[in-house]
Length: 444
Length: 120
Image (cartoon, rainbow over all chains, first blue to last red; front, side, top):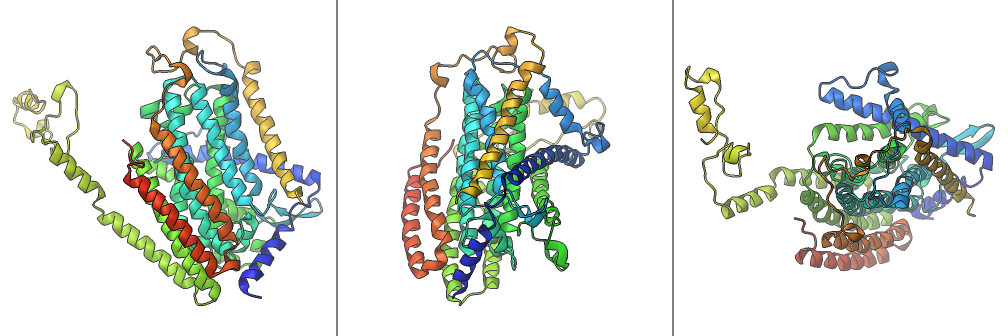
């Protein structure tokens, strides 16, 4: 029997663990995951506010509860006691339906996230995962797309300009990045030979797919930020352009549901990243030397720790990067991520064939992955993409070389080819001439 | 068979119940102070732009993106079963998928050349 058939049989055996829970146990698991998600979301919101504050040299919420931990819960209560407002122009049915449509799929995605191995729960041995089936990730992919309906319908039903634009942008953005996301899964399926999440975790006992398939991992990590509408890809709710985007017209708990869905989605994509690329609930290397690390209830700690690494990266990105422009964002998705993932799939298919034939080792694959990433970094560092456009723009728009910062009576930034005039400070100027110099800088 | 799908429905039902509860909660707990201005569309204080019938016009780009999405999503749907059962088919699968991806890639290049991926 060759190793591929062997692993297929193992995958099927993993799946036989599921679907035998008595109903009461299923209900306990479902309620447990639901409660876990609510707590994690409240914690993540607090974490985000604290971490961003820390990055911006502020303090952040620290009054309600120890270290401000209860702040997000209290915000939720506050929203529950707010006045309900239905905009006159809103389509009332769809307006109410949209937050529900956005929240339910977000929860449902967690049905297939593996949190741990088999544990004993009230005397019954059961895997620490709500359920699993042969098409678990396809299901996840489908249910994640359902969330888009909530956002589009919210934007449309509000009967207002900004939400409509936000909803449209959001749908275009999410479907664009979903392609890259879906293509990055293919590499994992090739090597795991299964789409069930527990099977994929089992496939990473020796080596994480994140190390083996570095380009897939990188593409997924970028796509997941685009998919969850988070900074620097938070165009649907670009505050400076669209007020609040699709949820501008929402208040009370309806708004809270959108907020909840957004954060659950953030946790979901982080959980998928952990499951697919970082070995799921299995303990990372130094801890895995301890025999008990992968047994009982401990793995849930490793899982959450890995997941919160991604959550922290999300927050870090938000604290660091400015927002993309819409056309740059779409160009990046369609012209860089998609062809890159398709090319990588072709390379992987060839490698996998050699792998099955037995003339190839995983070390070589890691080396290729590192090489590809190194080339990409080199390409971006030395890239002339922006420079060429800028030069074209300057050539096409001959402008006055002398830059007037207050041309037309309001401050304007320098155009390409123009330069800032050094700021005149009082200390640089001889007493009495300051006013004249400033007049000159303003352009008269 | 099928028993493993039941917890999904349970989770969905719980989430749905929670969502419906949250949506209806405000009618019971919130204050009711009617004010016409509150119910106008929010546009930073100016009179809201009147909406044309049917929600106005969208840029054709959005429809184009949606159609391109369908093409690539179908490609993904074909690639998934291929990837899962790749080990059983060997070289045959490799040749087939190269033919398939090259075909889709031609479509992609065509769209690119015709400016379907340009945003302004």
